[in-house]
Image (tube, rainbow, N blue to C red):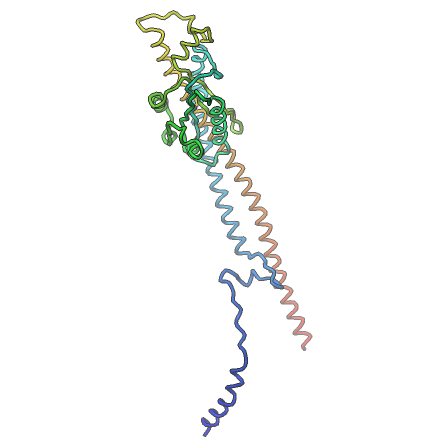
Length: 327
């Protein structure tokens, strides 16, 4: 009897229930939280988001400080060798002279760069100087080629000068630099390119925050002898008396090869010092920027936390006042 009455009542109420529209539940993003929704739809910063950001900035600051210390250690190891190597090529300048503006038909620009980044603008600087030398020495009857040492200059030069690159060398600084290693590199360059003048572009080290783009010129024995015959400046070589069975051409050939290897050795060490100094400066700036960002995030975190505490206190006091008023 009771069940029959319930079924009759259910059939009577069913049309009215079905006619009522059911409001859809609001769709919330899984990334949103109650802490991120402010009054009137205004989004506020979550303290958890700020804490995660502070943690990531602290980790980045630790990495940059460690990289600065590693660069400083490597700089101390290379700086003394670079200063001592400057005495290798200077006697050749006095012996064979220095004529960087000489006009020749075949020029080879040797660009020295680093294999790794995060070292400021030393790589872009040598690339700009190399391109400027290419424009100065290029002509209708002239041939200018590039020899690239280092991964960074290779990546930049391959974009627009791929057809003018004769040789590329990377990972030169993977092992500790020594004269035997650089002399093998110089011998490979001499065997693979034809030149009247070699122009080595590198960064000369002055201090941790200062380096100077430098161009060193090495002439071929034929050009040196030709300049000597036409009365060009040949340094002090003509003032020496040649003894033994070697001719002047053979002596010039040996001197040119030895001069190129010595200049390359000094240039590689100077460029390595400039790289480490620039990396120290860049990592120091990054560490300071991370510290400033961390200070701003800490201030934001404290303000957000204080605002949430104040809001909770206001709600508690309001609830207590409402209860007292109800009594």
